[in-house]
Image (tube, rainbow, N blue to C red; front, side, top):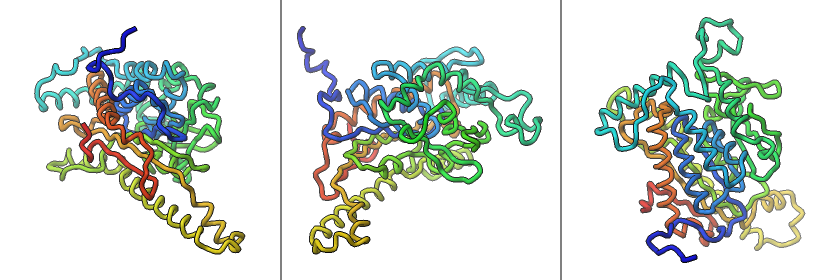
Length: 390
């Protein structure tokens, strides 16, 4: 069989696994924007970059369950199936294709109309409106706590996700949620929990749209209320390991000064849910510098102090592990507006998926993002939107 001509070779496909002990895929929450993560994963799978660990919040947790709960050769198709099912029009409106809408004003109007349809009718196989509405229900009942019923989501998860596979340990899965009673953040992890549909649903139970989910006598809301990214959970885990992490964000912390109330609402939402992952990355870089400095200092101290409690404490924080963090952050178009996280239309899903795929392909065309860092701190970060990778 002849090799493809150079013009047909995919320059982002990786022939050998990068020299890291683990590959982690970290997925932020963001509702309808989550199809961007589907496009990212499609490009990673195409490139032979299969994660050993997937960690997510909210819609990111759903995407993670679809990945970890299916065999590698079926994962992209299953993620795609989920997004096609929940973006089927509940009102019977015709599907539009990419490129058919001309002009931002018309595109914005169509997006807002579709979003209003979701508000009133829900999203197929995901959530449906409560009838009668919650303010007509008995206080204290589950029905009084949210505008939507997420029973369809449980059925979808049970149909599309193999939870026995998730709990087999083949791919580590972590999802974050917020304890309603204590306000504390909690992670449900396959190394410590038997993961069930309710763990995934809890991570995405954003109030007042969705009700809290009960797990072992406690009630949980969306993890994004406290932190919308699992970055710190993965980087702080023990034992430490050389890590290549793909951090996929759906909200950008950087933006423009708002010009009207609609833009005020959008900008506030972006800041609230971005979780400042770049700041977290910078802090981790500093921690790495300190670990390396402490390790160098301990080597210069007399060996007879090795049994001191202070020595042991410092020594436990020292290691020579290396980390690459690749940021992939969705950059919303101007016409999307503040409804972009609940605008579950097929057209917009396709746009987000394509953007995620293209951003990942452009990033992977730069081989240095997959190479072990050789700097003093053993840490490198890459960002398409900052580095201008094309």
